[in-house]
Length: 208
Image (cartoon, rainbow, N blue to C red; front, side):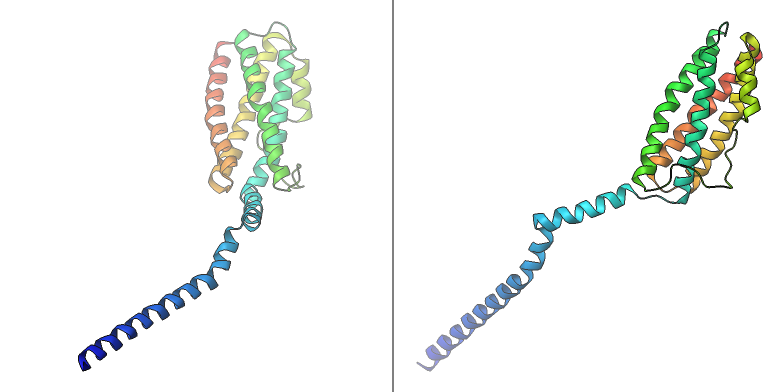
């Protein structure tokens, strides 16, 4: 009888302990659930995503900003010089083709970089005191505009080689110092494309 009572009491004690543990676990789960549920609630979740997404999109540093601010007018001048050549007569077909390719490649990149600066809340213009490698002066552009035929082709190639070399230098700086993945990727593409075009232009010059 005594053994049975002890067993019964032991069983009851174990059951009570399990029940208490269950209640304790349940209460913890309940007390912690609002916090965990709150973090995954549609309103809060979307709010967190909407605040972090722009932050990720705007992730950049001073090198990225300077790259875009400098490369936009640099590209604009290359497009302007290429347009001059496309408006001239008696230009070798290979040079005309090159001018067409430069214009087609760089015009969309101008729009892309302008969009970056807007999304980064940065000015579209570079501050005073900064210079861009390879840019032509007003006199250089006037000479190119006045030149015709083979003379114009040679001048265009010489000027564009220097112009491209400046762009490559700027792009390499972005590759090594930039932070924004898209800007770094574009800088790498610019180096690859323009170094190849520099070689093409030097080869063309040797034939004129």
